Length: 149
Image (cartoon, rainbow, N blue to C red; front, side, top):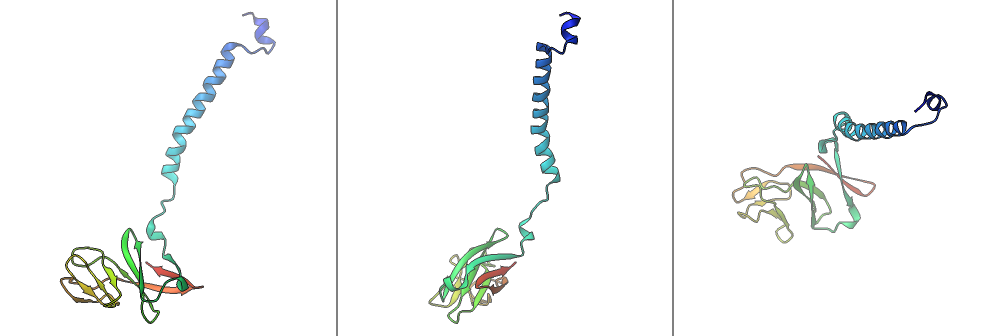
């Protein structure tokens, strides 16, 4: 090429290829560095940061019924007693970590593995469970059932 073509502001193939290469390089760097930056600088939201769990509308839960839910990836149970009182307990049996179930007829919690029995306050009544179930605080706000972890 002559000097006159370069001085006149005319773009060459080399200029075009340099531009395409530069855009591709910056695009690639962005696609590699942005996820790394996001990973390093992200605020890690932990399940423990949530202090209340919404378990639905109080009026929709039947009397003398139960509902299983999870707290920190472990099963828990919400019970609405015959009197309409709400109780939340860990659903993990203290014997062999089986999931306990609410028995309406006995008005108690039963472990199906070894027939352990708990009353509605979580106290171990009979069977092999050595300790009571963990209790969680339950309250109703604007007819919404909330359980504190």
